[in-house]
Every structure is written in structure tokens, then in C-alpha cells.
Length: 483
Image 1 (cartoon, helix red, strand yellow):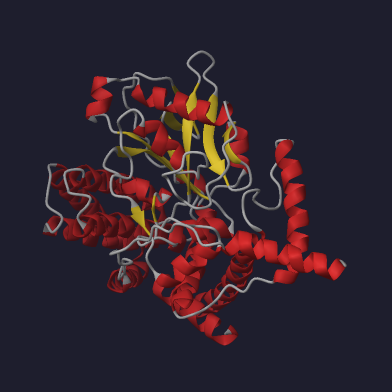
Image 2 (tube, rainbow, N blue to C red):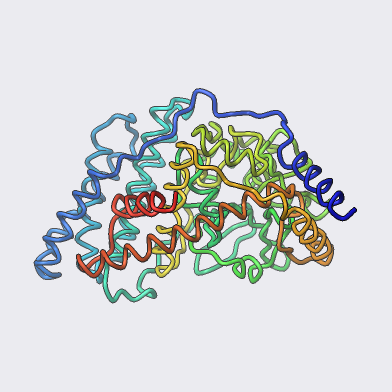
């Protein structure tokens, strides 16, 4: 009798986890190949020359490059086309400046300031581009990703850097909505906080789309106009939509936080200066007045369930501001297959990382953990290698005999959710969906360990941490040994 019950439970779970449903794929889309090998080769050449010369030998060159970055940024801000060579000139100057700063850590604060200037300039110019045009979208992504990746590599390569010296520039703006200060960043009600966590799902989310990024989650900030209290409105797989305190928000460990806000010259903001706060109030009401479960299907057409991106999407969209004007796409066959097995049904969706390139928004501040950049990079590389392997037929093997145990955990999770606590498993996920994600997490963790060991050997041989291409090659070799 027990055996029959187990079989029935397994069959029920299979039907729940694998039932076909409407699927919206990123049809016509092609995953973007960043093609960064040549950039890392240029970085490596400059870094090794700079390390031999020392700070005294590179100071003048670095100062010239920083001036060059500022001049190019000023030219780009006036407005250019996606294929303008100024974009490439700025990238080359920034790569060289990053390599020099990596060899002279005391200049890293200047590099961080230059990054903000360069990124804001490109973002400002790109607002005039047609975001439905693939060439334009790919160009701004490549540019912004190049700047961020080489900046992060400079911090990783620098020796003896003081984390307290890496305070990133903040942008103060006039506002008609409640304001405050958080993590040293001037914030205002309606700001979006795009973050990166430490768990496998963070790497899965940030690297799985056609334009892989470094962010995996978005929350919306509400500031009470009377008390100044900060609330972070967000949606988690374990609990659905909720509003959290600053302490709770940071307790869910973050490696990066990028603060974005509706740009000052946005027509909707000029017509209604309080619009961001109104959006924040709508978001807060949406999760406090009713229970909002997490949307594992990633389908923004159904408001009854919401994943994290849908909270600002609806809050601003209902007030006439369309975020993700060109939706994110997921089209790699292996990635689509894996995510479908985990419950996703829409692969033309809203990925948090893409908000960094949204023409409606502008940079307001950034915070990151210097000691989190290395594990962040390892997580990215492991995810990229696994998605590659998925395209070549690697499967996430679920184990149906574990289904009864999963159902027990789901019941325990349900109980904890009702008590306002997170459970071990997402409440809305099917049993086999949870098992497939567990398999991804296990594979991902093992691959990170293998790459870290190989990277440690590389450091012993070369005296510095490897770049992304070397790390990806290490991950591929590790996967080949275990397949």
C-alpha cells in the first residue's frame, strides 16, 4: 500500500512539474556573444607592463587616460549613433585605464569615478536609439558590460586595496518625492534597487538570458513621507510579494546593489513630479492588501502571480511609464529546456539585469562588496559553462523517488510561510521543478569548487587571478571530466 502511495505521489508530481502550458519563446532572438577575448588580451598586456613600471611609472599615463575618458564621455553625451567610433575609443581608453589602476591600487577611486561618468554618458546617448533594433540593443549592452567587467577586474587584480577607499560616486538630484539616505546613497521613493545575491538562483537569473548580466533581482523602494521609514517591495520564490525593512533586505546577502531611478528629464516626471512616489505607493499596496504568490512562469500577462520584475513593471506601467520597452529574451535551446523544467513558460520576459540599459532610468548610486567580486565571477563562469553544456544535451536529472520527501518539505515551507518566515522550498513550485533546481544548484556548486581550485593553481603560476576566458576554459574542462 505504501509503495502504491509513493507511486501515485510521484505521478502527481510529474504532472505538476511537467504539464505542458502556453510557452512564449524568444523567437527570432539569438544569444549575444560578448566576444571579450580581445579585450582581455589588451587588458593583460597593459597590466603586465604597468606592474613592471609601478605606480610612479604609470601615474602620468593613467591621468591622461582619465582625462581622455572624461572628454570622450562629454562628446558621447551630446548624442551619437550606435556605430559611432567614439564608443570604441571610450572602451579602449577605459580598458587601458582599468589595467593601469589594477597595477596601482591607490588610483582605483579615480577609476570608479570614471566608470560612472562613462556609463552615464553612454546611457544618456542610447536613450535616443531604437531599442527594438537588435544592433542598437547589442551595442549598448556590449559597451556597458565592457566598462563594468574591466572595472571589476581591476579591483580583483589590485593587491592590498582598502575596501573603505572604494566608495562609489553618488548622484544627488532634485526631487518632488520623499527622500532619504541608505548605504551612503541619496535615495528617493520610487527608486529601483537592482541586486545580485549569493545563491545559485542568482547566477541562474543573471546569466540565463540572451544578454547575460551581473544582476539577478530588483526591489522597489518606498519612503514614508511622514516617518521617513524605508520599505523594500519585492517578490521571492519562497514567499511571493512582500515589503521588507532595510535590515531584512540586507540580511538576504547582497554582493551588488545598483540604484536606478526615473531620469530627471523624463516627460512623465516633468508632468507629474510625484509620480515615482505614487508608483512606490502602488507597489506597496499591491503586496500588503492581498497575498501575491511568486510567478514561476515569468509571464507578465498574469497579474495574479508576480516575479520580482513585475512589481516595478506594473507599478510604473499603470502610471504611463513602460519599463523594459523591448522585453528581455531567452532563446538558447538548452537554457529554455532547463528553465521550462523549472516552471518557466514565458521566454520573452523582463530580466532584472536589463534595467541597467533601460532608457527610462538613470544611475543614482552603486554599492558592492570588493570581497564578493571573485565569488561572483566564479558563479557567472560556472553558470555560463552549464548553459553551454545544456545546449549540447546535458540534462538536469530529477529523482522521482525523492518526491514524497519534497512534498514533506513543501508542507513545512507552507507552514513557515504562514508564520511570516521563509521555508526550505518555494511554495508555488512543483515537486519535480524543485528537484531540477536542486540538481542545478548541486552541479553549480561542484563546478564552482573545481574552477576555484584550478584558479588557485593559476595564481601560483602567474601571480594574478585569471581572466574570464581562462576561467571559462577551466569550467569546460571540469565539466568534461565529470560527464
